[in-house]
Every structure is written in C-alpha cells, then in structure tokens.
Amino acid sequence: MSTGAHLPMKVLVVDDSQTVRRSAELFLRQGGHEVLLAEDGFEALARIHDFAPDLVFCDIVMPRLDGYQTCAIIKRNARFFSTPVIMLSSKDGVFDKARGKMVGSSDYLTKPFTKEALLQAVQAFASHHAGNES
Image (tube, rainbow, N blue to C red; front, top):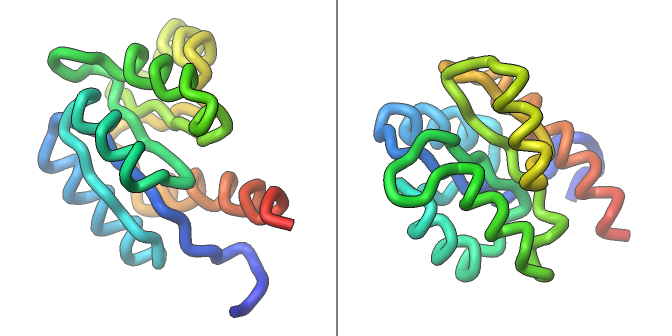
C-alpha cells in the first residue's frame, strides 16, 4: 500500500436532499473513498454504529433530527467522540459555524460544494487520520 495523502476513507454523508447525497457520493467515490449515505439524523445514527466511518458530512437542516442534534449525539458516544463531523449548510453563516463548533463539529462546508472542496475537506482529515494509525 502506498503511503501518501490519498488514503481511502470511510465517509458517511447525511443529507435529506437526494441530489446532494448523489453528488457527494459521486465525488467521494471518484476520490477513491468508501461512501455510505443516510437521509436523516436517525438513519445516520444507525449507520454510524454499523459502518464506523472515519468521517461524517452532516447537513444542518433536516427533518426530525437536525444536523446539530445529530452531531451532538455522535459526539456523546465515546466510540465516535473523535470521528470528525463536517457540517453542510446552504448558508455560510458565522452563527452556524459557531453553533457547529459548540456541538463538536470539526469543520464546515457550504453547499453547493465542488468536488475539489469536498475532497479537500476529506484530505485534511485523512492526513490527520493517518497520523493516528501508528
């Protein structure tokens, strides 16, 4: 296995928009990552237990359980406390970023995102993840 920045990551994408899920899945697979999708917070919580992703992209505005609540629940679980959660939002607001940080999110990505922005976000954590493996 080659060492370098391109480590395949297991990524969970949580968004109630099928368009967003599809484009994220396509971009991430093109980047060589393993992808799992969830359409709301409840599905995400079930999937995270089965899939144990290295990274989670989570939409903020979702029915039933929003992204902040989902992130907070993930972070309360000792097993997933250190799993990076990147919030996805269509508004690039200071308040959203601050609130995301309060519930333990690692980063923030504005929608619609480009393939480059999505893969860069994953890479930022892939290199960090590689450092934790040794």
